[in-house]
Length: 311
Image (tube, rainbow, N blue to C red; front, side, top):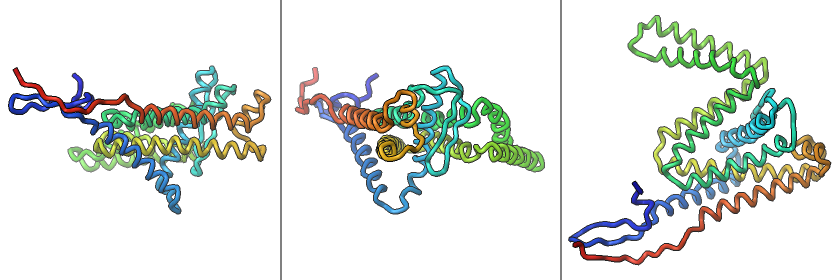
């Protein structure tokens, strides 16, 4: 059944007459949230210490970037040795092999994900799914790649610890039993933390689990209007962060020999790193431009009210 808000006009019946009333509230509301999210993003860029607010989103973007490298490696027949996320927003994905597809997947994958999120966020009925899906994606990237092939060894004790801790909250259980479950769950968490510290992946696990669970909770519990704003804000931040990183990459590739994805491409192809950085930046701008055009352009709709006698 077609939803009334998706039709060019909603019909109301009164006194035996049908009146066609033009409605674009749903579309206008979606564009309003997009504009507000963009304004909020631009304002935060000018506010001192605003990076504290956008810090979780920066971590989210880094997960998408490094996860794109990891997924490209799998598609190329390689395996992921380790995926590490750092508190400053940088990251590193070590794979068993590398090719042009793997090296270029980080920036282009982030931009593709950002414009996909931006386009889909204009549908209010999809925003909850987008937030939950993004959270599940971050959790999967964390579980699959942070410790490489050994990541699965972390899943079972982590799930057991979560079960014990949640079980200790059940009020119908005897108090000694609840305290025992709480202690066992806490001990497992402590042991897992020690292992993560020893392998240098503690921050990556904490960031991945907290971001993933937070996005899923937002998608489930937040109201649709605010969910649409958050989805648009996340998409705008993702796109602008990707473009900002590409701009920075272009300058460092032009002026320095710092190791980067563009430098890796230069070694594999013989084409200078700054050219790759420029091509990625141009591709990102083009992707964003096409997406915005698709969002804002729409067929002209005639809004002349009509009436007819009911038979």
